[in-house]
Image 1 (cartoon, rainbow over the protein chains, first blue to last red):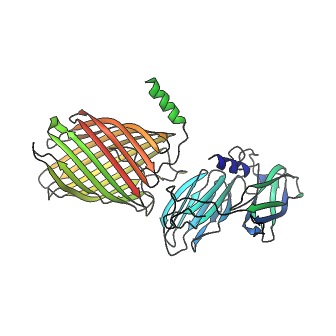
Image 2 (cartoon, each protein chain N blue to C red; image 1 turned 30 degrees about the horizontal axis):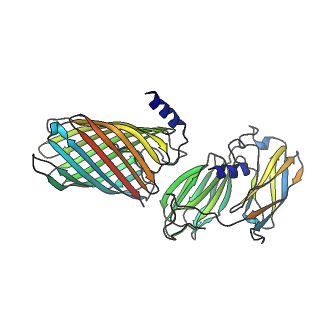
Length: 229
Length: 243
């Protein structure tokens, strides 16, 4: 629990961080853009695909959009395995595999258990708290995904070249974060955004091994006999 | 009394951890149901000792699978066995009933959407193996309220034994409270009664402590009912294993 709080604090997603914000939508205020690149390396030093990185800004809140983000279950994988949404938005979980999946989360920011559902069926959940939500399948231990529930809509996925652009960031002093699944530690940088101006922030992040997880009963998965890594 | 109140206040302040248990009570139905396509095997063992002026003693086994049809509806296929003392000095152990029951939770079970008050309806139809023309119907209206570590529940049950030439009906009201103590352990107390509505049956009431414990896919709960009307003791334990 303590390490989870430290991690959330590191990601700027503790309860105190999210609401410390102007109440009005950012789009109604003077804004600028934040651009830059993200360099991703594996723990052995080899470069990794930056397109697996979400870049976001915290320090202010915005209302949710009306879009529903989708995480499909396909080929015994969650596709995509990392998404960012705004607080109060929904995520849909369609099953595209010809067998059952049981999507669940035991994360402190959002616990749920969708039960088992078959091909063609979709279940969805709303996320009302900012935080990091790790999602797994209770049947297939190799399936893992992460949902970043963010306090505003200023988040984006980096391109394959590592370049990112965050449009419409309200002027002020904020913190820019980069997050990828299997990140060994959060990475962030302070940024001062001025109206109509472009600010450049380059970030670097290191990825490690897939963290271990247990099934929804808090047990090791029985088909492998050991915790999935 | 002060210690009990202090305990309750402290318990209310303890952060609640996830509980996978289906019922926190011994004699009362809970308001949790299986998630869709979830399966669980449930077993109950209960006794009613020295009912109706020390005449009757009963020990019963209830066993059945539960299947989540939707996230709010589950079906159960129970089998009941019963050991009794029909006449002094003689005992009988028999396969008593089998049947089907449905439990429908009227509100979402999702932690983010579930309201503090959760109602559940239960109906069951069972064939009595020893009385061939008897159809037993059971119904319960259950309501639970959860705030912090405290869970309170009221169960208003009805049982009818319907035969072509006679019917016996009884009410089975009960209520209880369960408090999260530590880890996956809960303690509380409950009252349970079986109140005959005709001359074909008799009534009894018991009250006592209860306990509930969850460990992964396994949960256990039980109550030790101490008779306050027409029964000496009424202990009951139930457990389930989810798959």
